[in-house]
Image (cartoon, rainbow, N blue to C red):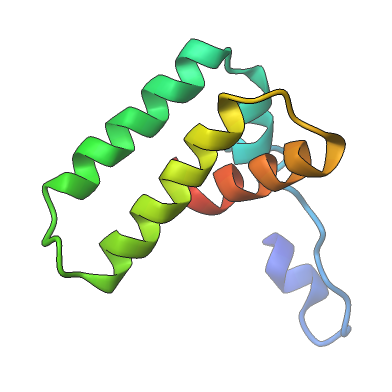
Length: 94
């Protein structure tokens, strides 16, 4: 029985993380990467975005988030900025 099936109709939420389900949790993956790996991943995503139509609101927003991530990577971060960086990265699904 799948994890959804066992909670179906019970009103409970399956709080299994992606890592437990057999795939890589983006936040864990991000935390394991070094500075160079993180910046390389961001630059690769920027290259991908540059191949899409520049007038797209999706691309515009995505590029703003990527630039914010690069900004946060380049400074000495507070705990709240570190959390923001983790959330931004995990939301990008890189």
